[in-house]
Structures are given as C-alpha cells and as structure tokens.
Amino acid sequence: MEPVSLYFHIPFCRSRCAYCDFTTAAGCDALIPAYLDALLSEIRGVKEAAGRLLPAHTVYFGGGTPSLIPLEGYNRLFEAIREAFELTVDAEITLEANPGTVDGDYLRGLRQAGFNRISFGMQSAWPEELALLGRRHSHLEVIRAVNQARTAGFEQVSLDLIYGLPGQGLDSWRFSVERALELNPDHLSLYSLTVEPGTPLAAWVGRGLLPEPDADQAARMYTWARARLARAGMAQYEISNWGRRLSRGKIALCRHNRHYWRREPYFGFGAGAHGFLEGWRVSNTPDTAAYIRRCGEQKRESLAFSPACETRLKLDARTEMEEVMFLGLRLTREGVSEARFLAQTGRELRQVYGREIDELVKWGMLTWKGRRLVLTARGQRLGNQVFLRFLHDQETTTRVPRLILYHSSGLITGVVQR
Figure 1 (cartoon, rainbow, N blue to C red):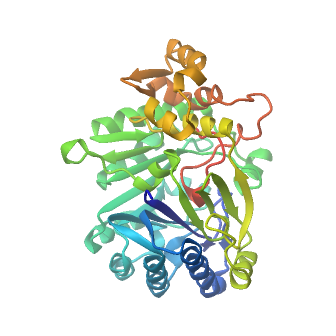
Figure 2 (figure 1 turned 90 degrees about the vertical axis):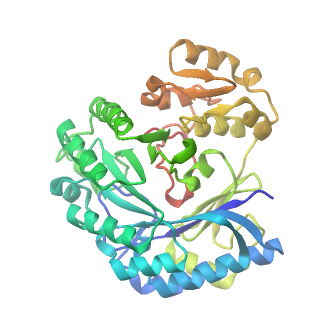
C-alpha cells in the first residue's frame, strides 16, 4: 500500500477571524481534554479496522489554532499515531500556528514531540489589515516566532499571506510580501481573500461598511507577487504556493498539500475533518461536542468511516475524471500527465477531454510539456475558467461557485482558484 496522509483538525481558537468559515470553537478551551480523548479513540479505531500498521508519510495539524493544544496532548497523540501508523523515515509533520500563541519553550517541545515543519499565519504586515481580518498578533510577533522556530530546529518554516482585502492597495501588498521575504521563509502560501457567507466580513460588506474585494486588483497583486517571488529565488509549484529552491533541483514544498492535489488517500481526524479513502470522500460532524460524544460511544464503521462520519460520497467515474483535472492542474509544475490520468481513471486523457484541451491550448491557458498538461501564466490567473471546462454540468453543478482554501479540514469539494 502506498503511504497515506493524516490530517488532524484542531477547532479551538481564542477568537474567530472575520473571514473564517472553517470549523472553529472560539472560547471553548475547556473541551480540549475531552477532544484529545476523542482524537485518540478515532486513531485507535483505524488500527482496529486495518488490523495492521498503515504506512503514512505526512501528518498535518490544522485549525482553528493547533498551537493552543498543550505539549502533553501532542505527546499523547503521537504515541497513538505511531501505534496505528508506520511513519516513513522522512515523514513531513506540520503544525499550523498563530504567531502570538507560541514561545521558545513551546516550539522546542513541539520539535521534540516530532514536528519538523511549522506554518505561521502571518496574513499581513500592516496592523490595520490584521485588525480588519480579526488577527490578534503583530508583525513583531511573526518575526519573533519565526526566529524561535528556527532556533528550535524546525526544518521548514512557512508563512501564509492574504491579498485582495477590501480597499487594499498594491503598495500595502508589496510591503507585506517584502516583510515576509526578509524572514527568509522556506515556503510561502498566498491566498486571495474570499468573502464567505455567514462571516463577519460578509456582513460588513453586505451593510456597505466595507467595499467588495476588487478582483482586478487581486489579479494585479497575484501577478506582481509571482514575478517578485521568482526574483527572490522561490519556485512556484502550485497556484497559491512557493518553495525555496534546494539542491539538485528540489523545492521546499508542502508534501501534504501536494498529496491532496494528486488525489492520493488521506485520513481526516477531528470535528469537521475531511478524508479521501477507498474512493469515498467523507467528512466528520463539524459539531465539536457531537464529535466528542460519538467517538466516545461508537466504534469505527470501517477504514473509511469514522464513528463521527456525517457525510459520505462515493465518487463515480465522471467525478473522478473531473477531480483529476481541476485538482491536478493546480500543480503548476506537474500539471496532469497522460500517465496519471490513465492510472487514476482508466481512460485516455485526450480521448475524454481532447476538445476542451485543444480549445484551452488555443486560448493560451494550457500548454503541453512533453506528455504533461500544465497551466500557462494566463491560465493561472483565470484558473476557474479553465477548471470549469472540465466539469460535466457547467450550468447546474453546485460545486462550481465554492472556492476552497488549500488544506483546512482536508477539504476538497470544488473548484479552487487562488
């Protein structure tokens, strides 16, 4: 069996960010001990269902704010992970962290527990923009956290930035990118802000308190950032992600997220977590209390279905082909190869999508690199327009409008732009 990936969702937060619509539980820290027990039970259920140790090559803790979990909790979780999974020698183990929630001692403890990669939600270097987003940290805390993580021995430090904020100018975006580059990150993720229904940000825009994000301005920000990061020696490997160039042509990429885009199997543990196993896309209940209760009262139904499983979708052949295209094309260097398409769908790429490919190549949105199909620079800027061409029902599908961020909850349910 090929190695799987493991995603753990930690929903706890000090407060909810203005743009966030992920599964979070602000001000519910009292539930952390019971939540950890539920995660332990869910992990052990995999071992019982599999009857053997399953190989795993990446582990990712996202949130929420995973850096709110005490070190003792992570030590317990890793003990259970190693009892249920055989981690590869070079396993990538990532923690998402808010810069203002960590210190040197905590980071050293994380490193000793097994983490070797950390991703800080920098988002912006401007205090006004951080306040708009509802972030509680300062840029000084970002600088301190990055330096402390390196001192603690983390092998890879990543920073997240958000652009396309209401009223954001190109100069302020450039300032944030330059401040991020000054920290010499191994990895950068740049995300265009999406105003999600039900968030405070959506309410402010709806009431006219903030302008709608400017899509044209966001495109200019993205175009500038691509050129600037290239000059800085960062290699783009996915529409929203760049890694530092290493020796022998390698890149400091996030192997966990690449696993998603390649449509390889992964477990999702925790409230609201999504998984992809045995051809099923599954998700756990987003209700934290219900997740705790169900993991304590029920056994795992099968390898794919956790006791907290709420939704399950068996992919048909058409959906599998669509996913191979709109997920794989996000990988700007790999794209979709004829061999991968055949291996994952049993069909020839040109036989299924020959007309669509020829049109997109003609329009300058796709290009062939050998036997691999990749997005051009124009195709990256207009990613959704490309991805729509590979959806069977372009008019009525409910998946199209949904713009999903890169990894939170292990969520892959629709077309993703930048």
